[in-house]
Length: 193
Image (cartoon, rainbow, N blue to C red; front, side):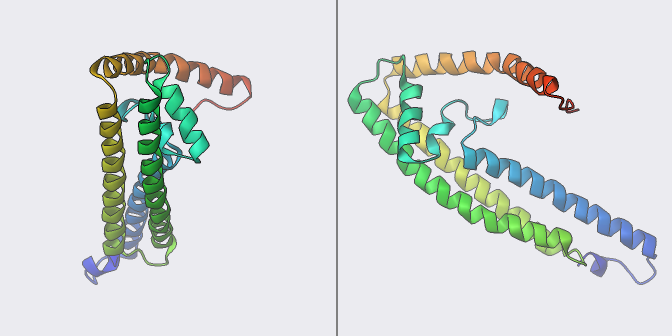
């Protein structure tokens, strides 16, 4: 408990401050983990820090994954055998990642329970944070393995073309984000700081 580290002479104001600081830390950890899980669970490209386009092929039903694979391989002169291999890699990874995402839900529930408890348990919060980090690391490793497996199916020329396409998409990202923000502004939504 947070109070355990404070001696009896500590005033109520300091104890409230420690309580709110711990709660704030938990909210930040839970929000970061939720963002991570959102990226994993919905297959987003994860912005400039992520692996890039193609992550959507690790999420959804088989027909969605097949379309995402086809979209990824369009313009690379991929053979039907390559497309089939990449579909299988993506579908297997999607099953693994879905199971990991579902397991992470219980961690998010635990974090919420800690945040709203009458007394904040810092040790429990740290334990949940460590578990969230381990879960995120496991999902990240699984996505990397799948991308490496896809890379092995493609020729060096196909990988180079794909890399160039990813660089172009990344370079265009600020413009897309700016346009999206403009669309939100037109609909009466306030711009985010």
